[in-house]
Length: 71
Image 1 (cartoon, rainbow, N blue to C red):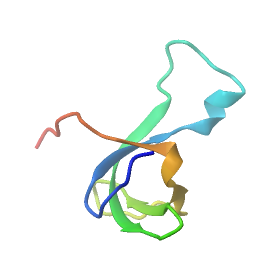
Image 2 (cartoon, one colour):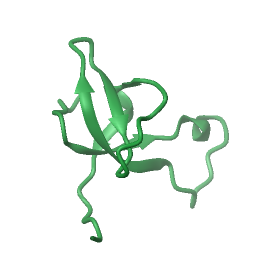
Image 3 (tube, rainbow, N blue to C red):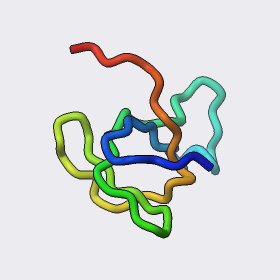
Image 4 (spheres, rainbow, N blue to C red):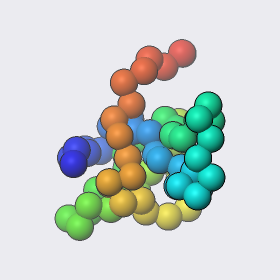
């Protein structure tokens, strides 16, 4: 499992595809910015406009974002 730090860019797994997997659909949402990481591994995210995600996310549902950002 990856350890995330504040200000890391991440993608979040969209779990709705567990029941209905479609080969060519995007399974990852984001990128998001990590704002807080708890000792238990949950992560508070915000989008690139600094709007908070409604709930904390388990770190196991995240992966580092390695793509570039168009500015």
